[in-house]
Length: 259
Image 1 (cartoon, helix red, strand yellow):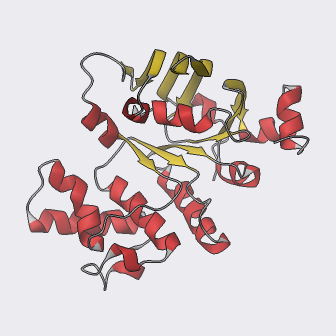
Image 2: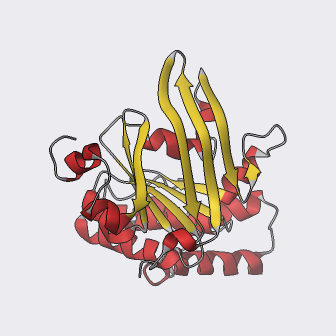
Image 3: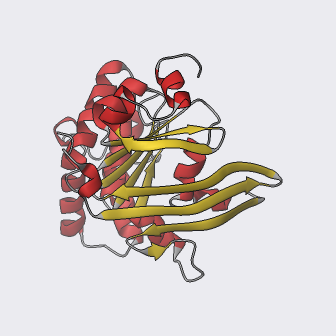
């Protein structure tokens, strides 16, 4: 169920005055955004509008690209993640990402899930067993995977692989889940499973999802932000944004006049 008033929730993440440049080319312009805890926020807009770029600024994935310059602040639980003393490995544990195409490691289902906890120092088999089961249950994959934990994750279907990637994130107990078009490579049934999963996960996590699919944004998100040419045109409660958008450009996009 969507929140009746998601805006009243405690703030989990805040973007303040973020500009982003790839060399001389500015890709994001003065982005300001507040994301409530325990909610799903959707980023929508045409290709190349900046939504995935912004998503990647929220756990510093853009650091991996040469020539990127970012100004402004991104606060998670009040801490600026671009501060000089930020531990980026720890940041990406707390703010995890699911990509467009499932990317399981070439190892067993069990080892995919145990990988993160092991990196963070958990070695006891009993503890790892519990984490693997809990994470797969949270990702609605336990019943399908429990009898093949030692088999290659690459033997799973595309939809199962995507849920495995979500389970792999959940294993390190993040605070925020970033999802970059997580269903665009999936069939309709797998898409529905991932959408249902996001609804369950927001009980424990704050979720931000980039989607090209406006119906998906309308179905699952509490708040939606519409982007165009690197600018956040409008941000508000999803039902309101889709029924009575405040900006003509949002209305034109939602009604299919461009995009």
